[in-house]
Amino acid sequence: MSEGPFILCDNLVKIHKIADLEVVALQGLDLEVKQGELLGIVGASGSGKSTLLNILGGLDRPSAGRVVVAGRDLLKLSNAALTTYRRTQVGFVWQQGARNVIPYLSAVANVELPMILAGRAGGAARKRSIELLDAVGLAQRRDHYLGQLSGGEQQRVAIAVALANAPALLLADEPTGELDSSTALTIYKAFRDLCLKYGVTTLIVSHDPKIARHVDRVVAIRDGKLAGETVRSKPGIQVPGSKDQPQHEEHFVEYAVLDSAGRLQIPKELREKYGIKERAHLEPAENGILVQAVEQEVADEAVSANELKGVVAKVATRKGVFGWLPRRKPSSKG
Image 1 (spheres, rainbow, N blue to C red):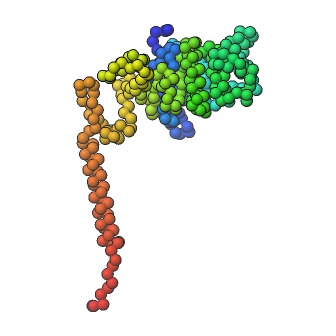
Image 2 (image 1 turned 135 degrees about the vertical axis):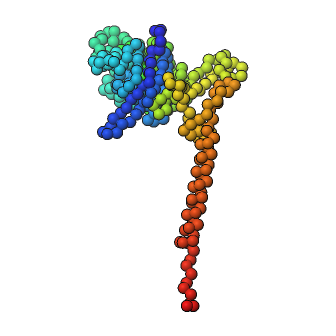
């Protein structure tokens, strides 16, 4: 294993320009991934997950920051070098089967095709194709075509295709998004087995809340930044900060993540629950740092709410006096 992280994202920024509109997809994202790690990436739609995958795969360039994969600074690569990196070092698995495999080719021919394009046609290519299909449990289905395979089988062929040229990095964007939960388990197992067998670093973008059970680690992206991390603790290891006995079953620990500048993202629901607005008090505590709402901001909000009620009351009163009360008829007396 090489020294340092296999993937390093340092203050990564990506701005998409659409006509005169600029959309910030990544805003200072920091991430490190070890070689051979199986990593899950979660986040809401539009949080920057797919943008990150496209940059790591050489399909897009960052606007600023630094992204290093296996010692290559992708921002400094020429277009030709980036194309070579994408073809030789990265394997892709997409959610839609049509993007992964060619329907009029058999499973073994699909796996063989990337090697033919790379100039590796012949017996060696056919042998590796069969080996990879066997590794994903499809040795008996190698001569079947796309229409003869189930959705889960198609995705397993896609994984074999992605690994055809022995990439160092495997990127999967919602690979179980169109599959039922039972079939999704077989896909996760295939990723796990292949990661262990070939040592390929694997990143899986997913909306599946249970993905933590199938990967080494899960990172959460929120608003273009790394916001949280979920780590699986090993059986028999006491969870940090816990007074309980060492765990004998799988246990998952969630952490908030600080960026390189020490900034911490506090989830919106917690900010609303404790009344934290634009500022917060940080106070040393016995076991860490206490984050508290600013009392003046809470008080100001209460005053503003009371003042608003007062204004509404005055308006209602004026409407009652001038608009809602019936007018008296003119007196007949002069």
